[in-house]
Image: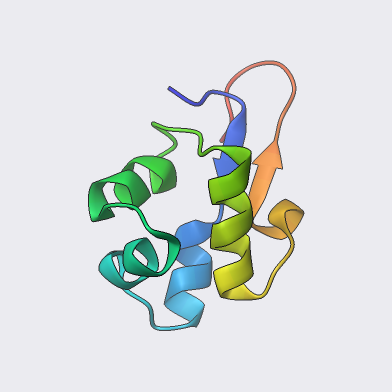
Length: 73
């Protein structure tokens, strides 16, 4: 589990009316990977995090947050 990484991918997708499948296709992963990232079960590589943020036209920091100590919320 990606305990210290939290993300707002679902929020950014909803704001752009984008499906998990569409995001997955645009960044070159499976829909299952996007689901796992959204549910904080998997922390993406730095490269994938940048690709996801780029699709939304946002910085990595706006899409992903690192929280020291304890679990991400």
